Amino acid sequence: MFRKFLCLSVLFSAFLLTFSTPTFAAGDEEDKTGFIMHHIKDSYEWHFATMGHTHVTLPLPVILYSPDRGLEFFMSSDFQDPETHKFGEAFGKDVYFIDDHEHLHRADGGSFIDFSITKNVAMLFLVVIVMGYLVLSAASHYKKDGVSAPKGIASFLEPIVIFVRDEIAHKSIGPKYKKFVPYLLTLFFFIWIGNLMGLLPGAANLTGNIAVTATLAVLTFIIVNVNGNKEYWKHVFMTPGVPVPLLLVIVPVEIIGLFTKPFALMVRLFVAITAGHIVILAFIALVFIFESYAIGVVSTLMVTFLNVIELLVATIQAYVFTLFTAMYIGGAVAEHEHH
Image (cartoon, rainbow, N blue to C red):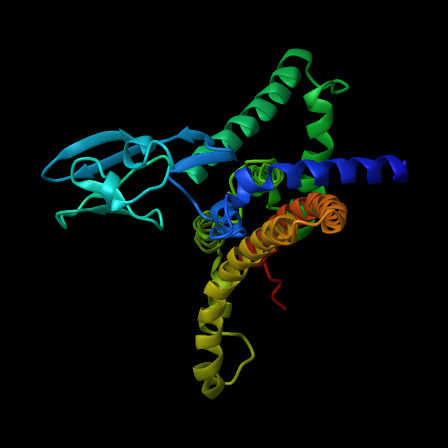
């Protein structure tokens, strides 16, 4: 088995080296690691591959609103050089253009609001579609067959749902857990599916986008603090058993803690997913930097190993985010006994 895998690695490396010049490097002057940040960042187009001078891309809608021009619709291809697919002020459309760093500007300095469907937004829609398909397929099984042995997708989802309900929600929140199970399940499946789909070739780095992780953290912050009982808020602003002079120190720390908890959730997911993608792409870049068959074989072996590790990380990060959210909710709704 190992010999077969090694042979496939050599063949794969030879294939990469054969097409490295037109596909990735395209010349000694160009940055052979530029595709790493291109994958990590968001973009107005979805770029899958470049073969020779052919760019395999998906143009995305650019939707803009300004008070003086109203609502306008474009495609990302309207702002590109048709041959190189590069953005720049020279390839602007009307008064708008996308610069080399893929930031949208208005040439006359006017204000506008950007509602564009970027790569990460398109990936978000795909994740939601996959989630919806899985959940609705499982729901249709139970609606049709009732409480019976699950089949198909339902048999795959049921153990996960039970695990999140019993091992995460119930144990972390306590008697009031049922109210929060839908949110925790949505959170787990969104992060998990987003992580897994992000590992596919050409996929977008959705859960490695700080805006996405920040939104999830803000939702958790709102749910925790809106549902916090009087004991929770009393602990924040009037910590029991603490002398009054020490409250001048404790209360600011508690208030800061309200924000550091979701901040930690945001940063943990963002860093874990983004770092994993960068490391994998860095090993791929070694093939084009050294243009060596030996490096190609080693790089392929490492990338394969890291991809397996990333499958585990994808699940762990979904679990950790959901678990800590449940723990924060549990701390906010817990009833304390009075003696």
